[in-house]
Amino acid sequence: MSTLSIATAAEVFDLLRDDLAAIEQEFSRQSASNVEVITDIARYLIAGGGKRIRPLLLLLSAKALGCTSESRIRLGAVVEMLHTATLVHDDIIDEADTRRGRPSSNTTWGNAKCVLAGDWLYMQSFSTALEERNFRVLELLISLTQQMVEGELLQIEKLGHLINEEEYFDLIFRKTACLFKVSMQLGAAITPSRDFGDPEEIEAQLGEYGRNLGLAFQIVDDVLDLTAAEDVLGKPVASDLREGKATLAVIHALERGTGADREAIRTVLADRSFTRVSHPQILEILQRHGSIDYAMDTACAYAEAARLTVADLPDSEAKRALLWVPGFVTSRDR
Image 1 (cartoon, rainbow, N blue to C red):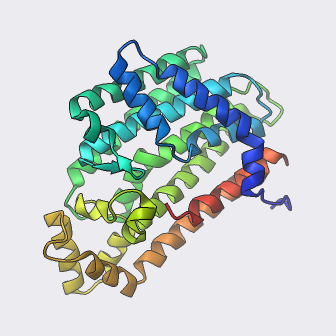
Image 2 (image 1 turned 180 degrees about the vertical axis):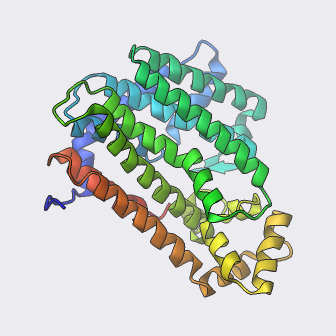
């Protein structure tokens, strides 16, 4: 393991500030349409902020390999556009009222306009990616989109039902970790240099970092959904249970709980509400079986696996930043 120190948040921000600002401008430029409502919805979503972690990963992947081309800015906007399109569709599917502490776009514009705006953003992201004239880039993005759509459909089919850990990890890979993985792979796909060894191996190695990080990210998201305060989270707490989704801590408690514990959890998943069983009652069950700790320990293990994946990359500021990201993902509060 390298003795290279892990970057601080301030150092990572300093390293990427200009590139992230350029991606923000590119995203804004690419999401302008002749149809005013599309531009309005896109601007509203951009103004909602977010962590921009996917373009950040693409930038760090490219920087770690010495890439300085404009492609990293263009594709940074592409992955954020794709992510934003999925959020629009997610909010419609989940019938969400809020997103990041503000009314969700579908609350403001209605489902019909938002589903079409989401479709437009998907197509615009591909149109932007096409400018690369790079088949590998398109191959990665097409496969990613199929995986994400399959993930949404699988999740809808499993709503209200009990799932096992294997099914859970398959779902969160498709819904979240796949985009983290592809963001890292794109950084390699636009870097022509072979100074770092076999390009396919390097791409696979960086993709594995993204996969592990994405799994950690989603597990933490699912824990926060159960435990965070609504004003911090920016949306109603325990949304997953109310939507009939069994996440890792819940699956853990179901496997270890008493008959009464399992019945309580099943009731909430089936009712998709806390009418008969309260949220504090569910939390008590999870705490009693160590299920929240189990989920967080699992997230931390994936975060550490991500760090180990990039341990043998040449030392650089980008590598120090890649070593920082897993800690950021597992220690956040929203």
